[in-house]
Amino acid sequence: MITINYKNNSLSSFEIPIPFLPYNFLLWFVTGHAGAESCFFIRIAKRNNKTTDFVVTLRFILCINVVNIQLLYLIQKYFGCGIIMPIHESGKVEYIVSNFDSIKNIIIPHFQLYKLRGTKYLNFCDWVKATEIISNEEHLTKEGMNKIISIKSEMNRSRKYPTNYQPNYTIPFTSFLYSSHKFNHFVAVKKLTILVLRVKLED
Image (cartoon, rainbow, N blue to C red):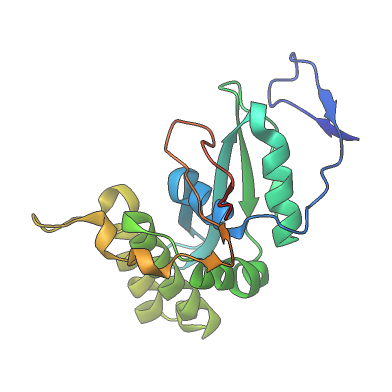
């Protein structure tokens, strides 16, 4: 059993069974939920006792309603990295990956293979650019850090779009995975829980 705690210590903890990752776990579901409830985050902060130097960290954050917390543990088990935070008073719980090696070798390869769509895909691409700058240690220079600051300033809510922008253009529908008689796809809508996990088409 896994003990689940709340950030507010006045709320009682509870236990859930240790989730078992099924052999046919839908990897498109991970991408689908990330498309609705994830954040590719870049944090930039001043170093202690310094006036000009900065430190940058990356985070992949996936949020889910507590009623579906077992699904979050399945995602954590699939990735094999990251931590699940105590439940917020709002009933939301977060899965966070901040280890750079895990981001570079696990999180990014997943979304390069099972691609996001729309604006989340654009944020992911910018996040990857920041990862490459850090991987090459360019962030240790003023020029490299300025590149990351520029990337961050145009991501997420700060992103500006052309007037004719249509989110679905980024990844064509034909990129989705079809396998035998199974249509492995995702349906995840912001502010709604999972609508569809798997659709199996029979002959």
